[in-house]
Structures are given as structure tokens and as C-alpha cells.
Length: 406
Image (tube, rainbow, N blue to C red; front, top):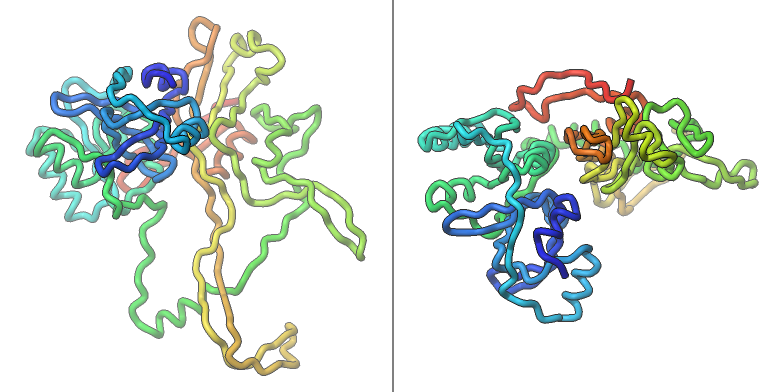
């Protein structure tokens, strides 16, 4: 077990610990982009929880042990080892990007009336209200309809992310509650509108539910490999990333004969820790550091892409079943259990760190953080560029083409 300070520095902001909450429950907590904040009244650690899928706040005095990996923490927790209760918390205080002249706050995921009320409250405390996650942002206050991209961007910048109740409590007392309320769920889209009338519901079902669907793989691959790398791609993509590109060796049967062939799917799945560069740094690290416009991308947070079930209709059916497309013949069906579903494509979410060689040409340094879908990330690897876009309707970021590799 090592100190919290060295754990954060060596793990690039990852924080894994055994934690005891106010109710006495002990658990393993794993945070990304951990940030330590200390006030006159409290000391706490905040970061993105892989378990809860949103930011959480941990009180430093409740941290029982710090570990290099979640497996080690799980092992110690299961072994019911005793932990010292007086661990010295010595997290490095990050150099903030916030302005010394203003205290900036952004509200997202609220309805118009709530946002206006919070804006008035913030301005009464001499805060500057922003519409997007700016470089100088201090606090992101998010509601139940907040998109994960904006919250993730804020935590990557070290911005403190708070719920409405946490923000109001902070203004009243200067303190933060220990954890986020359980009723706050960060989703990628607003909840679908409720269908009130029965006729609208029937029309909705007939329009959108097309039946159980299969997604066949195809032999038209998005990448071919030669000398262990993707041919024609701007970034060096090793053949080891075939699985991440959903290129798999698949059995295909033709006239009762089965053979193996490479096929392409839709489930791109680049994961945390995956690193891709230009030029290839594996041949000569020194040459990479001295190359013009050398660049390295590393995935910090990821959810996979793929088709997911969107809507489902379950019940019993009575009527006629037409087996062929001509509808020439049918069979009577009586009280048959039927399940009908529609599917949508979830493009996944990625947080990607952009690194370039520093002035000494001896190591790389983080210069930017990108929020992309899995599909956008694959396009970036292929073409060398991505489109900078606003994260939601409240974001004033202009649409712009950003070229990383010519």
C-alpha cells in the first residue's frame, strides 16, 4: 500500500482505494481524474467513478487504504485486513486553470426555470455564469438531463462537478455532502416523451417496432493490414487492434462447407489505456520524440459502440402468421407469446488524451483532451482529423475541422 500522493502521480490521475462511508459500509472505489480539495471545514477527493458512471465525492478521512489496482483492493477487502484509520492524506493540489479574478460556474441538464433560478443565485454570490465548459471554469453544476460528454470534459479539466443540492449546500455552508444523491442519473439523451393517447401509442409501435433483428457481419473490411499495420491510415494502427475495430476471424458456411474469413462488425471497442501514435514509436522512441508533428493518443475513458435494444413489446398474440413474403398461405396463431423489439446504434463514448513531445524532446506531455464517439475516433485514426463540435445546445463551441496528422 502506498501514499495517496504517489498513487495519483504514478497512475496519471487514477485513484483506487478502500473506503468506509458514513454508514460504516466498506467498499473499493476507483476514480479517474482524481482531484483533492481542501477548505477550512473539510477535505475531500472528487473524481469520475467507474462504478457509478458519474462524479462522486470521497472524504479523505474515510480512506482506509490506497492501491495500485482494483484487484489488489478487492483482495484486501475480501481478506478483511485491518487498515490504519489515521492515514495522512497528501494529495498534490493541481495548478488550477481558473481565473484569479472571477469564480466561474456552468449549469447544465436543468429545465429553463431551474437554470434561471440557479443563475440568479450564483450571480447573487458574485459568480460568473458560463454557458459551456470553459478553460477557466471552477464548478459544473449538473441536473438529471445532463449529457455525459460535458460532465466528463469538466472532470478531465479538474473542474468540481456538483448536483443542484450540493451546489446550494456549498453556498450555504461551504461544505460538500459525501456522495451524490441516488436519483441523479447522467444519460446521453433526454427521456423519451410520454405517449398519452392510445392511438398514438399504437401508431408509435407500428412505426418503430420492426421485429427482432440480426446484424450480419460483412467481408468488406474498414482496414487491411500489411507488415502488421493498417494500410493507408494516418495513425499507426497495429494489427493487435483488430478486435477494437471489430474485425474478427469468423466461420462462414457455404453449401454445407465451413471456412474461416475476416469479417467486419459494428461494435468498435477501443478501451482505457489503448495508445496509438504517429509515427510508429515502437521502432525508435528517440526518433519518435524528434519527429516533426509527432503525436500520441491515449484512451482515458471508454464505452463500446454497438447495437442495443431500444424498445420492446411483450405479450400474447392471436391471429394469422404468414410465413412467406408472398402471403399466399398462413397459419392460425392462438395466444402465442410474442416478443418484438427495435434496436438503435449506440456509437459509444471516448475521452482521449492528446500527447506531444515536450521542449526537451525526452518525453511526451498532455496538450489536449478530446471527447469523441468510437466512430469518430476510428475516423480520426483513418483520416488524421476530427470535427470540433458543441457538446449540447448550451455549448457555444464553433464547429471546426481539427487536423492532427497531415
